[in-house]
Image (cartoon, rainbow, N blue to C red):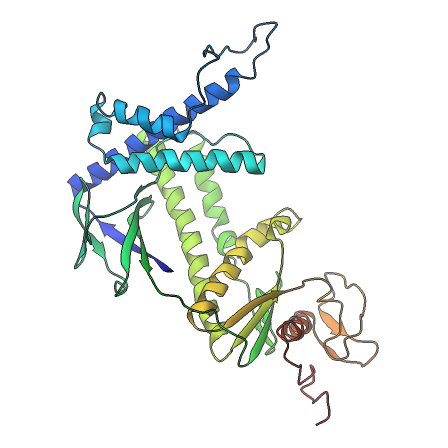
Length: 396
């Protein structure tokens, strides 16, 4: 089964904007009510048996069952008969809100985290249509239940022989978007190792260093707009809660965050396609980026978005028939790529690799990318024909 996710920008009219906002408002009400019901039931089982709590008491009968998805979905059916603002909303959309809440509680228990958050009008930003009886796309329009035919900007053609499964309407700072999930009953094999190998080492001095001796500088997406963002957020704290001025300023801040995010993603996609040109294998380090986000350079690491870049790179490699693999990250900067001798740990200000055994000297990041390439070739069972100097190792 092959799945493709496309995102298009919607161009709704005034009536459709009101309908979309009504959907978001109803989804927020269902989420908050269902979350409060689950939290009250859980907290009622934590009260002391021999005394009353000084904070609050949850008076819920002991025989009340846990409000699972099945019980809350049945209660939602009865609530739609009473409340008109829920009756006008597609029932499957509201059921998907309860499913997402149920998944959030499952993850909360498995990861030992806190309760999910209540959502205000800024946090509830999307809703899902889980199925369609017929194909709702016709030309530049998509027909959504109880919203009507909404114009969308087709930035790419709709894939043929694919069936639309799920549609998610998203509200962003720059407008409304829709994510379309298409599926086709075909099996596409993963790329196999072939062609020219390329090792990539990431860092903060340079965003990426390749085994082709190419150093790619790191764009500072967040840092370049950090001052403007800081000024806007400083003004936000002086605005009255619920006022129109606070709402307008919140939208400006959201637009700035969206600009930073989209600029970063655009750079990652363009760089991923550039690295796939002329290469059949790409090898990167297997890094735990959660630990990177807690060190002294956490702000710069998060600004670079290395985790997102690796996800995009692996997807682009799959689309372009390029083999992608991760190798062991340990000691890549401490091994000489020419003679494979361990040269010892380097300080951060040491940017030149110099081997005391063979005398090979080059940029530190370039040397690490050569080690990554050699490890990748060994992992796929292909010989390393050339050393770092470009000479034949076997002497053939």
